[in-house]
Length: 157
Length: 157
Image 1 (cartoon, rainbow over the protein chains, first blue to last red):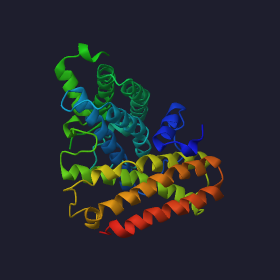
Image 2: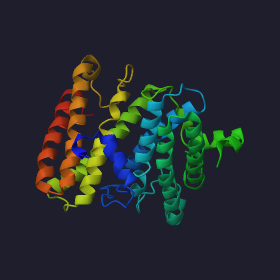
Image 3: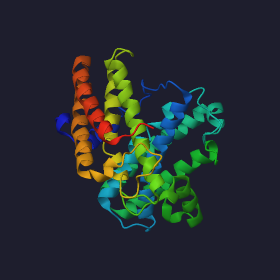
Image 4: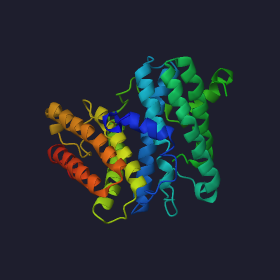
């Protein structure tokens, strides 16, 4: 396999499969807390948009498009690795959705992040079956993972 | 968890937690122009953050970390596929960096996007050599691609 000839998504999929992106990143630094907030919010916006598109298919609000399901699952999986680095000390800004509980219970927060990261490759695998019923099951499990973390750590503004 | 065994209200609550309200009918569509703008800005923020981190290594402003270089190149590569879908008709909002030229010269804009997408796998491949000199060359070429498109299509606000 020559990586240079691969589509970036395939490289990323390979990287995710090998856990390359799962490790605590050495690039986890921001010049300003505001940049960290922007960064994590950006990752959540991209993740949420793709998850919502999958949700629309799962709920029958949009026609099932197997290719788009895989693309969106891959985006969710990729994004599930990005936001956590941006919750460092001092990034608990008042105008964000982040509850102070994140920094008080960082171990639980990280455990929740890991749960999501463990789940998203399953979402990709389900999408790759091309079967909406299989996607539906893993989508539901993933949505529960989102909700558990949001209930504990996300403030509605 | 089996979605079929869940009470519908629980499915809805879990789905809401993951942004289902933002659902769009197909992969490349947004319910509101503002969502499209947020989406593309988010992709550029993540891409720009990782590109800047690579840049800091290339310019000697940060120590060379081969693993982080690969991670960041992969993020750049992944993101290079996302923003373009969000420049649809009607998304030329006045408070964004997008110049009207994007919609007047959509073919050129798309060609520029394709150039970036052709370049980013090379950036990943260079990063994987673990040689800063090789990264430097492709980083420079990629930066030129960014700049050419920004000069034509990005407004400084």
